[in-house]
Image 1: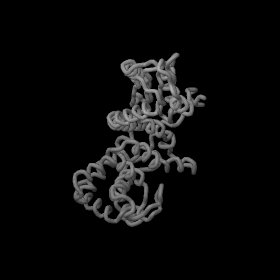
Image 2: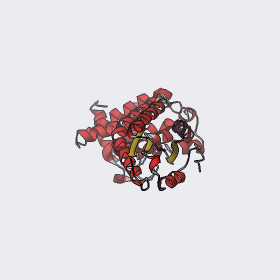
Image 3: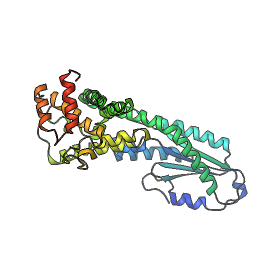
Image 4: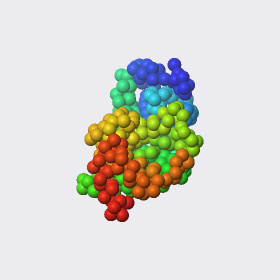
Length: 336
C-alpha cells in the first residue's frame, strides 16, 4: 500500500515488513530513517501546499534508491525510511550521504532543506527487525538534537529576512519595537537575560505576518471582516513558527500574547492583567507606540505628545499601568 500524497510505500507496509522473519541470505539488513528539519516552520510560514511539494520532492529522492534489495517508505508526516537487504553498514552510510546531498539542493525561499538521519545494521539477526529499527530511531534522535537547533535558528533568521524583504517597513518597525521594549525591560531590573529576551521577542513579534498577503498589510482603507480575521491570526502563527525551535519556546509564548490587552479584550486568548506575560505587556506598548508615531498606508502618524496622551488614556484598559508609567518616565528623560 502506498501513501496517497507521495506514492511511496506507507507505514502499514513498513511495519508488515519489519515484523516478518527474514532469511539468512537477506543479510546484512540495514534500516535508514530520515526526518526533515524545520518542517513545521516551512508549513507555518509558506503554507501546506509548499510543504506538500517538499514532501513529494524528498520522497522522489528516497524512491530513486529503490532496487531489488531496497524499499522506500513514508513512515511519518515528515519521516521517510529505507529497508535495505544485503546492504552492509558502509554502503548504508554512503547511501545516507547521497540522500543528504540531494536533499540539500531542495530550496524554498532561500532555505535549503536538511534531514537528520538514523541508521542501524543487523549482520545475522534471525528474529524480526524491530530491534534494528529501534537502534536506527535512537540514532536519529541523537542526530536530531545535534542538527536541529542550529538549523532551526538559522531558518528563523531566514524567515525574518524574507518578511523584511517583502515589507521594508516591517524591518524598521521590528527593530524599533525591540529597542523600545528592551529599554522598558531594563527599568524592571530583572537581569540581563530578561532584557535580552524582551528585546529579541520585540524584534520577532510580527514573524507570523510572513504568510499574510502584502495587499492586506498595506491596504489604505478599512479591512473587511475576513481580512481582519486573517490579521488577528498572526500571533498564533508566530507562536507555531517559533515554538518549533526549543530555544525559542519562551519567546513563542511572549509573541503569542503581544496583542492581549490588560482589560482582557485583546486576542487571541482574551487573557487579562498579570495573566499576560510581563514581556508581552511591554511589547504591546512598544508596538502600539511605534504604530502611532510612524505613518502607515492606513493612518497618519501622531505627534509624540498625542501618542503619550493616547497611551495615558488607555492605561488600565489596553496597557499595563506600571508599564505605562515606566515608559512615560523614559520619554520624559529623553531615553526613548
